[in-house]
Length: 347
Image 1 (tube, rainbow, N blue to C red):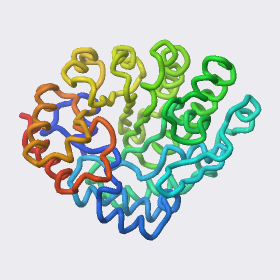
Image 2 (tube, helix red, strand yellow; image 1 turned 135 degrees about the vertical axis):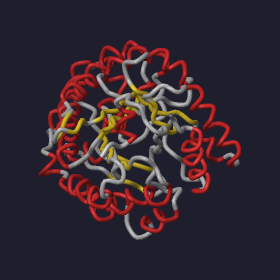
Image 3 (spheres, rainbow, N blue to C red; image 1 turned 135 degrees about the horizontal axis):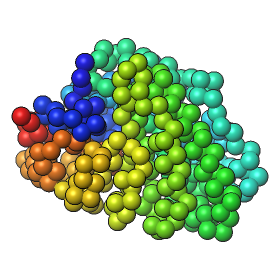
Image 4 (cartoon, rainbow, N blue to C red; image 1 turned 120 degrees about the vertical axis):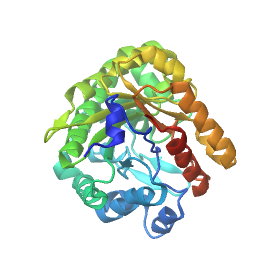
């Protein structure tokens, strides 16, 4: 069965532009909040039956064209041997951050089948629940983004510790990036083996770096991941997506990541991005998430603006320029998806 999402990833003609949303299984949905009220966030990630339930919710409620595994990018560093906590209203926290060469050496590259079997079981259960209706996207955090959390001990406004390590201790930084990269390759390939039909690499903090530092010390690790990913399973091509938020000023370089699709945040005009990439990759994006707080008629207008900016050529997956926020009314998300279905019809 040909899925329009996968066809668009490979720049093939589609009947209409496919649409899904980053964080589409999330707190904006009352159904999600009902589940969340009964479990901690990590329980939801680690219990396959719960991860399956919340992954499927937006498929049934909103009618999106792809499902994305419910999990978190920090499941992997926890499996590498660093304690992870999620504090209420505070976010993720690593109580013992990775700051020295000795800290890096204590990390190990996990075996996904032994160390995160719940993720792989969730993928199998989700596929059973999807029954072929839409493809399933697996994901991981990109090495710099994951390492940032590990070194900073959680979220950060200035990334001072990870940047200092990259500049003052380049060997330690590269060793950390290498370990995270090795772990990410194994993790994503295990997701593909379990049944993911596409995988996305989230580089949320890429734009925090100067261009030279990103290109010299970070980007080669990203390229190594995409070069090592399984691209075919049982005769089916596996789609790969790279989303480097804030990398618009060096978007022409990001084309060389090796992914089939590049995510575009809302700060870069999609038509300009298409001019930059030509016919080399598909593009995913890029409605500003804040748009979904506006009235439905405004949402429809802005959806049309994004679609018009890209044009009628194949290779567009409609998405937000980052994740949907908890304050968005579900009806507004539905209005966006319906507008894409209406205005994005092709042929």
